[in-house]
Image 1: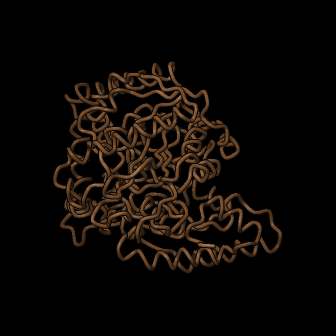
Image 2: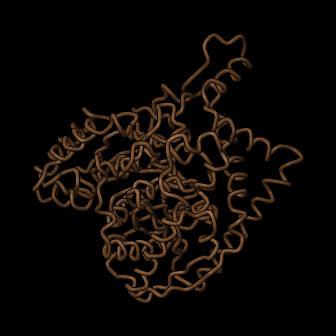
Image 3: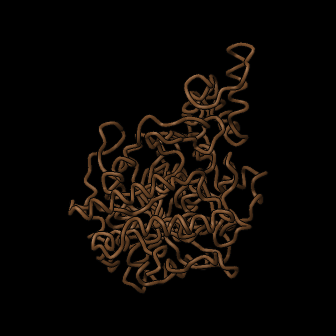
Length: 486
């Protein structure tokens, strides 16, 4: 048994049957991490001793005959913007260096209650602002399929760790595609649930009306299992919705026969890489061969999505990040001349360039005289974008699109051109603006061996259909079984 190849579902089943101990699995993942981290840098901190202790505790529960949790003994990676009690949480930013969380996020509590073992914190773009994991204060993460290329972002560390077989799965957060785009570029599955399905209590806020936590894993079944564990109402998050998320794993076997899959013409336009477009079109043809009905639909306001997103997201970021002033959290500039000097130098020295850029953009669009011209207008366009999805779903059950216009690009290729970097999310940000669920699953490779992702988009709270169709496609292909040459 090659332990690092086990999926979450396979590992959990083997541990429950005592065919495998959690300590053996965690030790194998730690050994793999030591071997590949020098070239990947997916983690910013590995909890080696703590993880082994948690694994032994899990094995002891199994030995006593305690009722095992759904994730009993399975190691996971945690994005560095999720609070874990007693551990640093920094969002890969200098301004939060030294901050130790006094409490755990709801998703962490739920994973722990299910028996999961936390292997460590994964790298990310600073405050989740980026599409390449190049803006982290800890240094860049590299793509396991080609270490000269980026893993995507902002959850690039989580996606790279899963693809490189360091952990069977990891948690990420998705504000404009930050789970799906890195999952696509690293050849794994990434699920952004419906806004409100998963509590954000304990997630460091970037843009509160867009942020959502979700799993990155190597199979759709694993994604379904993790969603069952972390989803559901949380009274500590007023945006979480009281809807049951049980039965996700049991419901994925229904196939795709009779499912109407919509193809929005606005997502297959000039600028998309020829090989990416070809892989997605072949995936759609395969879905049709599997029994799905393909229908043409339109999302006519798609061309306004990027501008709308970067007005709303930066406005909310400028508000959320105002709290990092050197008084309450993390870094404080040394020897300030006075209070104002402390504020100015702390924020100047603590934040990176991309975060400063977005704070300035957000402050500008919220400023007196410009609020109605930018932020209010963007919110009205957001309503139109959501209305597009509502109309499309009157004609179909799911939408199928590319995840990213290109496969993984080279390190540094877009770092100096923010607009080009922002366009990496052109096919994912509308989903966050509308609040609907979507998943990225592998659907092919380029001629140079880089993964390509297929994005399936569902109706609000219809993760069941989304996961069922994704699993049916995954079962008919072997793209998800490919392993990077590490």
